[in-house]
Image 1 (cartoon, helix red, strand yellow):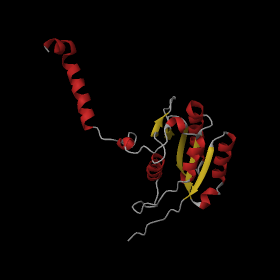
Image 2 (tube, rainbow, N blue to C red):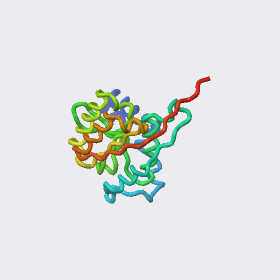
Image 3 (cartoon, one colour):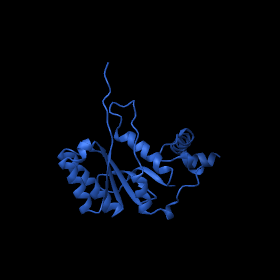
Image 4 (tube, one colour):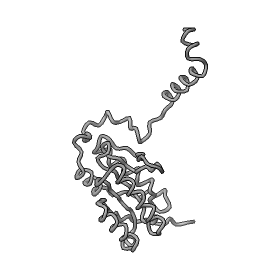
Length: 193
């Protein structure tokens, strides 16, 4: 035992101790669901195709959260969408890192690269800055990983859907073979007392 201690040294033992402490205290996140073993009806990666993914996209509609001032945030929708996807697909990864200079993360990677899905709120895309930022993101996701298996879902009001900037988003997606879906949500304002 003394030989092992001499070989590893105090710094090595500290690193090993910290590692084991991390393993013991680590809490599961939605990136690493512990319930994967309990649901064996989900589709495994080798059987997933793009049409199946698009069916799940088209069948999703978020529910308003009364605790939020407008009923929805991008994060609240992402959480609901994640649960929706995990009911069908074995492998769904949130905040999947795409290699590149700026290290962007796509909202969802489905079936280890079969498709990438990005969610946005329309209000963030109605200004030039948001639109051009989105174009850069989608271009990077497409060239680095997903090719023609990239989906953009925008959530917003019926009025926002008709906005000129939103029409530009739609045109950009069509030109670049990116699946685009606009989902109308009804935001509300809470009464202040």
